[in-house]
Image (cartoon, rainbow, N blue to C red; front, side, top):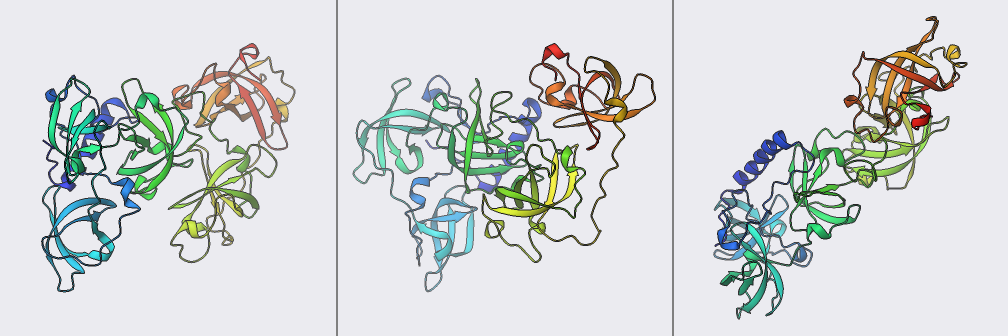
Length: 465
């Protein structure tokens, strides 16, 4: 009764295509592409077209030894893209170290498979006993069931489905039985868990954390910095730490690779980083930072503005760690290590900062500090006085507004921090204003020496500064 998954590569293409279609309709936030919504009774379930017929032996992976040789007719498991598949050995070299195999899943054949690096024995079936609670797969869905009997060799069992009370015999333990999964209702937002990446898509990755369905780590929750390609961050089969970010009412599971990006708004979210203090830092000035996280494409370093302020994270791209070729970023630094970095780029609109651990090259690629505006005409303006301004640009952490003094003699740009736009949580500054829009603001602080002016769109009694 197990579903036929067809060609493995076609199944993956179908998974991604279905994901793109769903995302275009419902948005990218927390769309799950895996089967998991259960109909009323097992025997009425429609076949799940996107179910990947891959048996995960996560609990056995660490114990199962690789084989050194095989022969024609052997039953083995072959590793393909970090996932183990059951296979038949169709042919083998004279010494048994190289084989041609056929995958059970889809019937594909592959030749010249190196035994020592990619082939192992099929792990023993899950140990069962009468009365044990498990989950049984039926037509692409997993159902709570109670074991009624176990075959002598442990390969088959009989079970009773909890929902409906139907009984079934001769169930393949390897293909259709697994330990009970964590219920979504029992997951707590903010809980840290370890999971295995089961698939990667342009919009994120799906991670198995042992729950009743896989969770989605959206691309926006993979890193503090902008991720150009999810495939540069994770790969199938990789073990990663994640935090439960959201469990929706309709049964979708959202995960985050960053503790700072948990939840759908308010509460556990961290305000967007303010990179304004780094705009005036010359690319020849060295700052002391601490390695916050390590990714395949670079190192994220937490640095504090030299003139004081809140620390933020910047990216030292792999090419900026040191001279010469760097094969593995994890070999170069450790999390928590103090390093010296230079600010090479600040992208206010994208909310990103580029750093380097290498000496400067004498100008090429450097940037001149911006010219400070004369803010002295704004120093005496009362915080209760409203000025007309025009939105110059938006950033993840706030809005830059060009304001003019009441007499029209002086103009300068000031920052309306995201918390000073309006009451309540602001998810995206671009949803609040448009570039060129005229708005009223108050001057709440002026630092003429640093060339910074803080503005507010809120009344003082509404929580404004």
